[in-house]
Length: 317
Image (cartoon, rainbow, N blue to C red):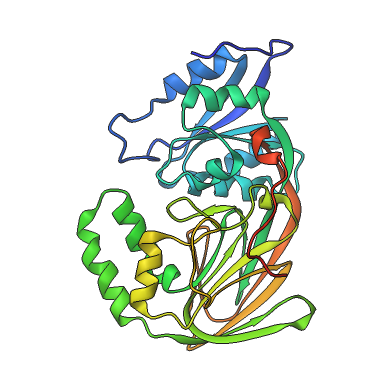
């Protein structure tokens, strides 16, 4: 147990705990252990369990009405993103204890995997303003924390997610989707009415520096820079896409010059034929999508290390 180095006052927190997060762990995380560790840091939690059919939105709204201003999410990226969008525009602070599968949001925030260390950071971390994004596809509007995928990645996500959570039988469905998905004409209308048009299978729009299997696609603190990062994988074959799925894309890897990196505040993406659109793992439908950044929409606790200045590489505005 890490000793509490800040005993000035007791903090009261709403603890959002997802018991199904990180289901593939050899030793499941128990909520009593989380509560005990929080109490060692003089953080008094009021727990809420995320279960099928639960009213997470109602629980967060009620906690806000009761005066809670620290929301600690113990779960994976999906649970963190769900709570983040509910805190948008409030004066509450988001804290994170990572127990999920990929944990890209905690990685982006510099939150350690070690649970006692992550909980200690709730005391010693830096509170910063963090961007969110908003995606509008038809009549569906969703605020997102991580990003939006258009095309093949959106089609593959449910199956790949099951595969990552231990369902190895899904590998056949992954390859079936890869072979049956056609390319589309993709048009990107960016800030200042700049247009980019190519044929391809995938466009990714990210708010977090890390995506997928911990691929870094933007500088460390890009989650608060007022921009969204666009990765357009144009004119790649499915075999080339498959290579990038397993080998990764990112700032620290050599890339095919056909992969375009852009930074935008607002973006409209149109596809023909219409492609699937997904934001933070949630299906938004098919067709044209408008995506925009919501600058400094929430406050989150991050590791001070990630706030050190880093220069962007291979990014065009």
